[in-house]
Image (cartoon, rainbow, N blue to C red):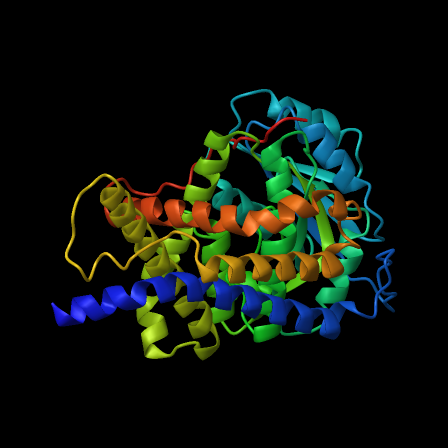
Amino acid sequence: MAALSRLLELLPLFLFAYPFVMAWYWMAGGVLYWFWRERAYGQDLTPPALETWPPFSVLVPCYNESATAIETLATACAVDYPDFEVIAINDGSRDDTGEILDWLAGRLPRLRVIHLAENGGKANALNVGAMLARHELLVCIDGDALLDRDALRWAAFNFLRADVGAITGNPRIRNRSTLLRRLQVGEFSSIVGLIKRAQTAYGRLFTVSGVIAGFRRQALEDAGWWSSHTLTDDIDVTWRVQLAGWRATYAPGVRVWILMPETLRGLWRQRVGWAEGGVQMLLGYTVPMLRGESLGLVPVWFNYLLSVIWSFAMVTAAAVGLLMLAGISFPSFVTGVSLLPQWWGAVLAVTYLAQAFTSHMIERRYEPDMLRSLFWVIWYPLVFWMLSTLSTVVAFKRVIFRRDKVTGTWTSPDRGLR
């Protein structure tokens, strides 16, 4: 009982300290990365000039993409790069995606189309595309994403280091019609961008972005390619590439314009899916981390473990607080658990303001109108932690008690309004 009492006394401190420390951890890493990799490049984002430009294969897995395929593939084929091909993999679509892809192939010389008879999942489609690609360097985008004109030039620059096996690009939101959009602009600038910069600066990435990522084919071969038996193939392949001895890095110049959910239901389903992949990674790589198979990945793994513990602690504290408000009495050592803002509320508010300012200074070249969303950028960390907490708790339960086998098949996500 004494130990439990002491633990509950420390609970409010942990609930405050974890997001506070992580915010400054991300800011420090983001600034470090900016000094290291971004400071030398101007606001116009002109790619560095290279003596030679290695060829690329752009992989676009498609499942029921009739509404977006023309725009996505026409934009991909129009990027400014001397030598590349675009491969669209029709993964057993049930709409007229196949017919649209064949029609596009007759009009876009750089486009190749592969038809798969059945929906085998995004991972399987990427594996087929990678094995049939003509080039060693691959860039993978989703079937609704618009590749930036200079994306491949920035990708080539980031692959200059021979030990880089994977890069993660810079997704920017293009559907901007609702409050959720404004909050997500805050997420991709003040949260996601800083996290990926910090993780690159500190040595290891948690995950590449599934919507825009680049790989060396040799790194994928060493890692065992994409797996169809994981809930999120992007997290899984990132870890296996790094465990195979390759480096993964953030490439903010490799931009892609994406569609995001603009309904609460769509956003919730997306985030629970992401969290399920994170929990699966946490459990699946526990033994390798304890064995010390990749010491560089241990901090990333341990941080995610802390985030899961924090999420359960937050839900526990919230439940206790609500029950106390309902008049249910608890032992005296429980009553000190409170989520009502006190001094720590002001400290976190100032921290999130500093985080918003830091992200604005770094991200303004990628998000020119970011000042218009600054109000939402300031508040998003609170929304981020709430959403992360609930989705992690739900995802943990689903992964632990999952009885159905992961098959890898997929459906088109909520892509919001345009």
